[in-house]
Length: 70
Image (cartoon, rainbow, N blue to C red):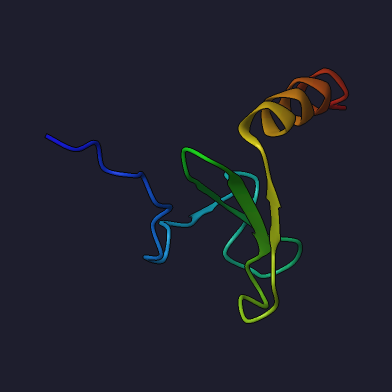
């Protein structure tokens, strides 16, 4: 039996809008998680490329963002 090489999925990920976003427009962020990366994009302009970061970097960002909430 041969081990198969694991390849990243090319299917479009499931995007989730921020719970702080309203239905009235404004500043909206969407996030899609994959095992190898977390993708972030502007929900008002989904045709533009988003940002991809590693899961560890995303976890660090969330930790810092949650401490600086006003």
